[in-house]
Amino acid sequence: MRRTLVPDFVLDVREAQSGVGITVEDGLVVEIGPAGDGERLTGRALAPGFINDHSHAFQRGLRGMVERLDPNHPLDDFWTWRERMYALAENLSPASVRTASERCYREMLCAGYTSVTEFHYVHHQPDGTTYEDPNALAKAVAEAAENAGIRLLLLPVAYARGGIPRFLDRELSEFLARVDMLREWASERPMIEVGVAAHSVRAVTREWLEGLAEYAGRSGLALHVHADEQPREIEECMEEHGLRPVELLAESGFLGSRTTVVHATHAGHRELDLLAEYGSSVCACPTTEGNLGDGFLPAEGIVERGVRLTIGSDSHVRVDPFEELREIETNARRLSGRRNVLVASGEVSPTPYLLRAGWGVDGLKAGAPADFIELDLTHPSLADVAAEGLPSALVFSAGSGVVAGTWVSGERVYGSPCG
Image 1 (cartoon, rainbow, N blue to C red):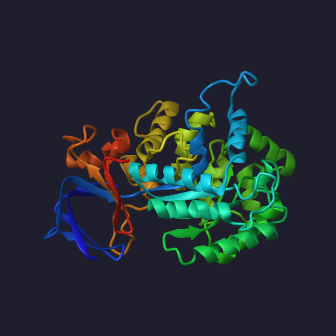
Image 2 (image 1 turned 45 degrees about the horizontal axis):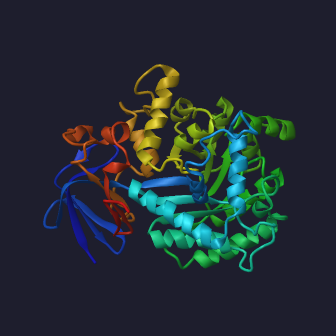
Image 3 (image 1 turned 90 degrees about the vertical axis):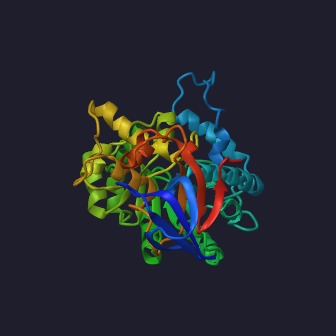
């Protein structure tokens, strides 16, 4: 069905334009132009939907349950949190993964995310044996996304050592054979894309990194990895390889334009140079990184080098893209003692860089998927904000409560009130 939506404003990373209509047909934006006849969206602005580029949906089950000290571990940190996460993972089944993922994805839609990248590493039964369908848990995640109506990039994650048995594969060839089967299964599902990932340089060998890079490059797949999240990870990488994590990724052929390094909170200058040199991106997850005590994103160095940035809600202690973006800039302000820190070359405000990190695009365009959000201009956070201030108000003054509707592939899959 062809329909034209006429909001009060259409937003891009720099401005809000009035008198613009958005025409949608067959899941695509087919025309953007002067407003004529159409469905009036009074009190609304339209903007691109946010991309959640790093998710562990099952970890939402930890929400509210780990904010207390364990008497056996009075010094709580990332590593003690990880033990609690392992305990949650031990008890998952295909049915519980589907339920937890769908609940998480519906919350994302409510918050303004229209796409999610699921970093999926729970593959096997608790004793490490495979399910009758080796991709049973991955398919449960994909089916949850389809049920919720969110676009999904599903990343089966290679895990060769450490962790718990249900994460692990004995041979890289076995893991990649399962990825091949999952890609074939997903090929007829228009809202599902399959990529591949290494959990971290701790969890796989250099040979696995090389093999994953070759496989992803040959197939043109997105390739992700956790790196430089914790100082201990860096120390162990130096002991084993004589290299820091991103240096190891570069030497193993893992870096490239389709590679995303998740966190990079402790990345050094040379590592940031390598990310820029290879055209790789960084996914920041500030609400999770803050919750886990991971540290601060080296955001100034990332912006100065022109490294592409994305955001993720990771463990889902919060699901709010506006908050993720705001924390990136406000943390940079706290660290530097300055304001308007993350201003990209040629800009006068951090807003364009940050919104581009959240949206993945500068604005809505004809020919692109009709994935966008309705913003409630009457919401107290945005009421009476001048048109020229709307993009920055989204980053610095708003939260997910301003999202009045979420559209994916031309369908309004969520509208306020969320429920």
